[in-house]
Image (cartoon, rainbow, N blue to C red; front, top):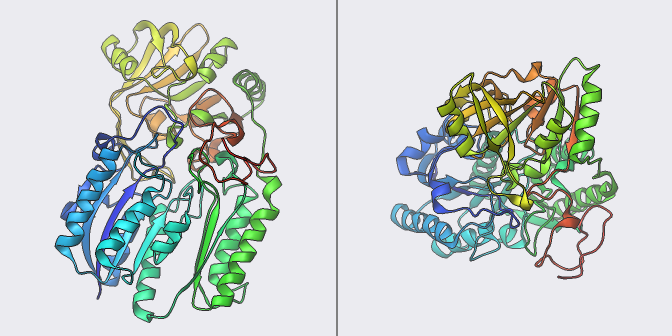
Length: 508
């Protein structure tokens, strides 16, 4: 039995987004748990599809002593404030010094955190932890699929274990895999070699989906290399590939991979093979993007003969990538073209949601909705909105991505513009539209509507692709710029291509 410290600090930072991640964002609960520390952590994460939940469950099964530190996560946004970063570090610093020594540490990290005081949040956190526990203590961390896996992170961690699915249906599974690797390293006490590679082009999030090629095949290879069954490399113990998070203006932004094993030559060969495979598929990381009017018109036409919903992915206003979830480009287009029966969600507008509650079901409120932040100079959509259904915003996710998540997102409402027949789901807190329960919470059965607009990039596919007639990708106004060429970078490393087969970045 080993004594293993467990903690986590999760944030996906879109440095171009208008809202920062403050300490309050890490403290409060939304779809994930609130800030947890000490003994409250283990029961607090139980049942969630998050890495730390899978990790603590596996540690208990293996009989190890769990020493809970602190865990916190905040919704994707712009820079983590220096205040938030330092407050979280203060908890880690105190607990590591107070509760040590340890035999190992497990960390639930994202890999794309950028704070006001450091562009490599995870690398800085690992550096500080090493300053306390030394260079030899095993530290294994799980990483998000969208990590910008930096050389410093690879150097400072004993091992890094990333998700293999997007939509992320394997988050808790990844925590479990990280603990299995940590347990193996503790038991075998054999030298572990590492091979790290960076790729030289950025991959737009919308084409990183593992439900479709080329990512599907690439991650099948990741599994094969690790298993060794087809590669015949029994010296490999772990393989992680992170396609990166392009909306992060940092030098080490972009795809990377890391391979671990006991056979140095096998490790290097596996890393070279995986890097070459990703590189060979560069041209395939592309697809069609429609503007809101094109999307609305095509959806209306397709829905005439469809037996299932035509899904419109409003990818640039995805709150899961730093979007405000309140832009109105797609909503306005659907209304302009009178897409009767269409429903879009979620429009995060606390004022409108609460006004709908005050107005009451069946009554009409005359006001603008959306464009609360006013990103891109947008204005709210004015209409006579009939309040169809009110919800509490308290419900449990049931889909593959958000399954088990206990939502607490404030008052919700379904409102309909009767002139066009288009409806919107209003909410108070930013949560990605990736679970059907978000619509059922206000009386909408997603499978029964002709056109469904979702403020999500890819995660929605886990729960909505099975009910969709087809999926159209929409480039509407939003803080998550889909095409990296359009992002005003200043800090990328020179020589990286801004998108697959795209221009080379030569500096600001």
